[in-house]
Length: 522
Image (tube, rainbow, N blue to C red):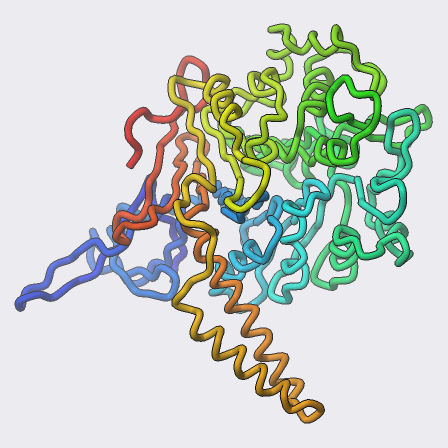
């Protein structure tokens, strides 16, 4: 067995087919750049036996490469965010990160599928919970409970919901002052059951703290990060760590008080509001990350809103920032100046952007001008009342994007069918339910071990039923070696050897940024 990777933008798996006494070698499956291939015995100088998953195929040796590329999968989990990041290079095992996990079990099901061929638990380097909104964090609950997975570190925004009048902790002078930075601080806060109550976010964090498979639970902010070259970095991904990618932490922006204690400013419903809005504040302090791989940059925008974006544009654009909830129209107008946008672009400029807040129109044009990506990913769902992505926002993305035809990819729009289970697995689920009901009917004589086994099988089956649609048809895949890039998604009705629709991106020699190759896609 020799691990190889498929060459880009797509490669093909073949089988020998006999018909009318003649054997012909035919394409039977299309694989995407960077897909893992188990290379077996060579056939000749041109062909080799391979396995893809657990099935045998033939493949052209020229369509295999040694280099693992950067892989981002933006899962279609309905309304919410979930991204699986696998770093490039030759780390063994590769460092995998989960940036948000949606609201249900879909991300957990996808991870079970991804690690299906691993004898031991799947290794996840980091779980990043960008902020305490259910459509970003609740999907981590089954992941943290999944005995197959080991998670080295859990990161969060520093704002922890709790029971009481102060949802996000006490506020003083327009600043939130109870910023939970360390694992020990989280344990202290949640040690009181009355502070947790029935709230799901504290329950999630408590699950992580109690699991022996999960490492420390800490904040990831501009203060609680690796400090290097005057910037904040995700631990292990600073320039000095020598890896192939860097990941900068651009938010939440901590503003220490006079004694050095961390604070996060309150945000109002609008930038000029004079009172704190809990929802705008926790969304506005999403963990904001920018990844850089050899000049290919990806911005993870969390659930930023207009109030937060105005502050970030001032902070990174070099505009003096007033105290919270006291901004004037004149101060806010400064972010529209070309030199301010250019200065902010040094930190927010990117080639692909995970659009803020699922395509909400609560954004600033200036922030999008500073980001100026050639491709956007919008994560939204069918059955929600927010009307995401908003039509005016889609127009604004096209207006502020880079190049003649910026790409706008939406998990909802790329999947023509609503999120649903696999019908072919329904009979197996019905049989399991019947067996569970029969066992439960025995009352005290029920076999507890058998019930535990059947319920585990049911959870696994449900994960697979829901994974099929969200992990295949609506998912948006990015693969890049830092020189070229491919953005792809699966066609719903196409033969296996033409399964991918994709766009290629190449570096523009004039701007230095990446641009889509114009055409109709593939």
